[in-house]
Image (cartoon, rainbow over all chains, first blue to last red; front, top):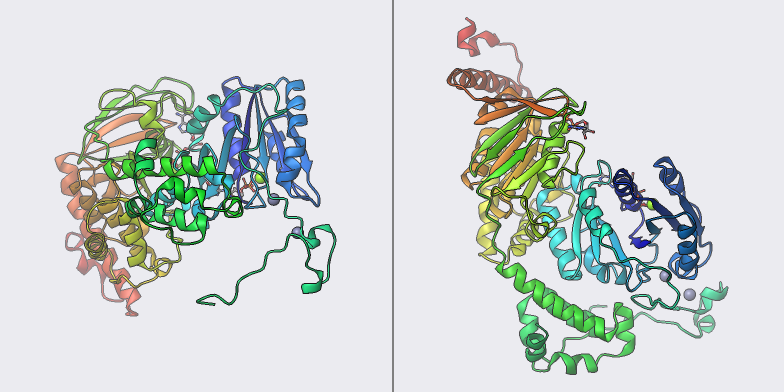
Length: 232
Length: 341
Ligand SMILES: Nc1ncnc2c1ncn2[C@@H]1O[C@H](COP(=O)(O)OP(=O)(O)OP(=O)(O)O)[C@@H](O)[C@H]1O
Ligand SMILES: Nc1nc2c(ncn2[C@@H]2O[C@H](COP(=O)(O)OP(=O)(O)O)[C@@H](O)[C@H]2O)c(=O)[nH]1
Ligand SMILES: [Mg+2]
Ligand SMILES: [Mg+2]
Ligand SMILES: [Zn+2]
Ligand SMILES: [Zn+2]
């Protein structure tokens, strides 16, 4: 079974991209299933079900969805094998710019949209910097020039990745993305595999229930802003 | 490649591109010593900084190496040469074969006409992705008489196709001058300042109300926006093929716009419902039910009609101008149309 992680900021078009690509894969006789990871709620599973794809949902509740992802992905593989899938796609919410669900030896896709500003590629962490394919959506509403500048900045932020322009509404770009997905490595299980980058633990007092503001309450892993330096 | 980054100093690497300098500063939080090596610089970066940046040491080294390679590639990548673009027929919406083998050459303008929903945008989409029988239409596209290698088809490095359509807008919160400079810098060659002036000057020849480099990109009018997009695509985009999906009501000089693109030896395909635009093409593809059913060469008689149609259009434009200027439209319109009298 080929496993593919798809991550990206909210509303960039991850579901649209996966939906359109999976439909195309289906016409080529591939059995594609999706696991959707989110924090509190999602309706993406309905979209996938409408496309006739087996779908599972994981809601992280009050932990970071990417942390939740790692704790559950191996079980999702077992689920996918039970469903006799050729390809398992994990869509994760990408709510945390610092965490990333990408696993070594598993095709990693990051979705970003052209509306988010020319400097965005630089600002996204390992989710983009360590992805194998960067999918750029919403090119249909910006200029050719903006698409070119955006792609240029993606290339500098992640010089190894392939860049795919994708129209999440019409599915233009799906052929190209299928090409990359068909070439994803096959994996039997993820037990013992490593994340491409460690997720920060970030356990500060507020992580564990502190609600009171003030220096006296800030012990442990606390980072302070420097408001005294030049320019401040 | 690894030998070359290890033998170059931080200063040399930083000078290769601002993105490289930004990387060193971003990771370590300070400007690095220019005469040090990459390895000594990396050894001096704390675990904490790397973790904040989101890379471990090996990944950082691999990133510098890949970035150096990317910068070299961007610097040396000439626009891919397309001498011939061939469209091979697929099937129509009923699954019947489309009898088509059409070759287009640089400097050629082809219009695409047909009823709403007939498949004009589909044809442009097939060209955009250099389809190989893997889109709903089953068409195949040849570049220089051969199927494109996957490297060409799936490379954003050397995109063959630039696109313009009615739905596209500028969204960046920047001035015209700053943004066009940013686009010019992507070419990594040429004098950025003079390219910016050329693009803006060209755009002003296409649109009504002139604008300067300090205008905000998102405040431009519809016509100014379209004009800037066309001038920018003609002068700064490396793509040899331009696809235009319906730009009729843009309020720009459409003829000059197309001439500008064709003068840069682009292959231009334009889907349109507008007779004046359609007749500007050397020929037009007629689409019905998902397939090209006819190719019409623009005849002498049609070109002669084009002149009359353009007069008609200019008359209408003059009336629009009166309207915009707050004038009354009460003088007899027939007098503006000599052949109607
Ligand atoms: N040969 C074909 N086989 C199957 N489907 C097709 C074919 N050609 C076009 N289609 C589909 O028909 C639909 C309408 O086509 P398209 O959007 O290209 O129309 P259009 O001519 O651009 O219309 P408009 O003038 O309204 O923009 C699309 O979903 C397209 O994918
Ligand atoms: N115009 C345009 N809209 C898009 C595109 N891709 C996605 N969208 C729209 O963006 C919204 C969010 O998309 P969705 O796939 O749910 O994003 P997700 O949260 O990343 O999964 C939806 O309304 C989509 O229709 C695109 O390429 N162009
Ligand atoms: Mg989604
Ligand atoms: Mg159309
Ligand atoms: Zn997180
Ligand atoms: Zn915390």
